[in-house]
Length: 73
Image 1 (cartoon, helix red, strand yellow):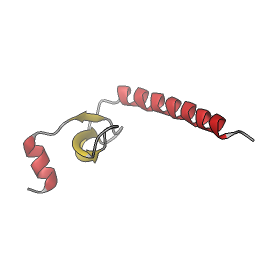
Image 2 (cartoon, one colour):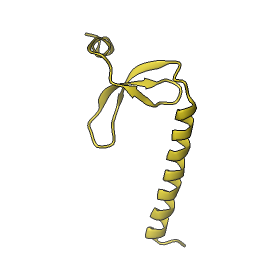
Image 3 (cartoon, rainbow, N blue to C red):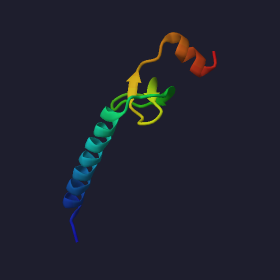
């Protein structure tokens, strides 16, 4: 049976491989449908962002008008 440190190292390696696969898929995506959604950047609180509906990649920050429309203002 693996000890905790080995299990953590194994999971971190799996996570890194999955993140690489996600990045490759996002690179190949032409982001045909973009939508406004809440996203949580790694070291921040939730923010309103424009993301690709297919691959989930954050494309950009919304304009003030896009943000207001999303919030129903």
